[in-house]
Length: 218
Image (cartoon, rainbow, N blue to C red; front, side, top):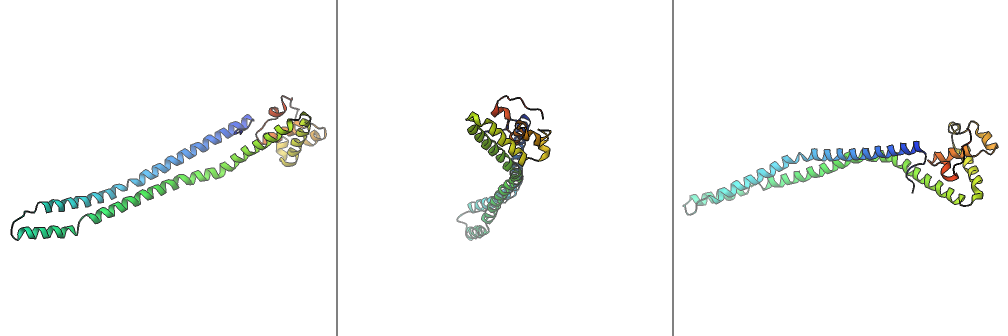
């Protein structure tokens, strides 16, 4: 499968376009990671809430473990106080912090993917159809010419077909870039300049398929 045209100017242009799109995709991905990391910094708040809840739980546990046993009235009062404190433990803070941390990670992932995917999709929507069409055109013309030129007697007919397509489908300003008088070239059966115009539209060269035939003066 051919990826780049034979014509050097167009080959260089498409190589630059491929490099530009690859660089654009790379930068978009890097920006997406940057946004993801930026949002994840908010996770420090959620982790602070979780640590506060765990600290509160450790205080209650330390208080309960420090209650002396066997002291009339005092031990029972302190044990009841420790049990009452457990109803207001840090578990709610821990749960809230964990829920907040999960939400922050999800939001960071969604925003990172969104920020990266929008410019990537924009670039590919513009670039990819034209790139695939170029590859498909080159492949189709290549296969058609190879099959036709397998029979040498069809060489002139193939040049005529290509020249005819150029006359009927190419804008006049493009035709005049290859022939000073397309109608005269067609009438005098000078098909090569017009065939060259048709092939180069698809990124292919006449010399590649028809040999080193001298180009006629245009």
